Image (cartoon, rainbow, N blue to C red; front, side, top):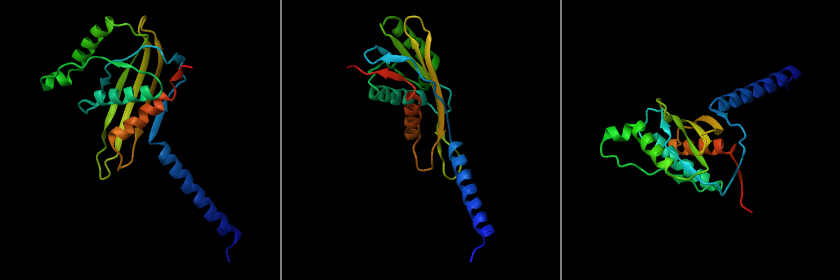
Length: 185
């Protein structure tokens, strides 16, 4: 027969383990997602090149494609900047040339909003499990006057069996939760 002290000790140990597990899971993700102004779904949007601050080549291009699909799911049919012809490794890795060409294209277009951002992390961590880690910042501005309308940032470390792309989708979806879009009636 257990005494009250033994029962209380077991209860405290269970609560401590649950609290430790909750803290460990919460430490794997961090988001800064403010609420945005309400954007009309029929507005014209452009997805501009994201800056790749990660060590993974083409991470920004991968994130842009996921962003386009996630925006479409929210009711925004955004137009991508035209892809540039990359003939060698230097042109693939030169994000400044891509940014410059995209800005020249944008100057000749008529859009209401521009969405872009940066990829801070897009890789698998080293170690036995090789967990995926993704960090992304998104930035929306008016196309006419370049005034920032909304900005959000998030990072997530996934589990060993997850893909970097899957974690990237989660991060972008979580960030876009803060983007308010008025649906067409």
